[in-house]
Length: 122
Image (tube, rainbow, N blue to C red; front, side, top):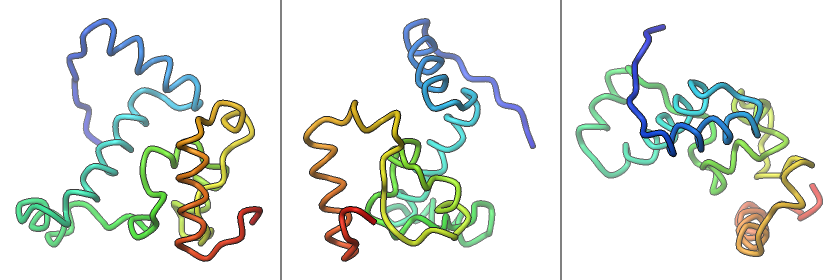
């Protein structure tokens, strides 16, 4: 594992720290996961990213084909089983997140479930 130093302005650092604390992650875990999510999305659009992927430098994430694969993963009660390939469904919000969901998030979750033909309560 390599260490990377990242320069952030004070406001961004504070927001990242609060975000990581809310999800019970370190700031490094958040940044690494966000990088991987971005990488997985860009591999479909940029030949350079495809080259890095085909070289095996970054492995395909098991969740990449799911419509819910995004920063929503942090809010999902199945985050770990999904990441390891043991959960096949779509996003189910963690209890701590459910009361905080905006209508657009509720609609997106319902759409993901419909796309995967998953019952809303499963």
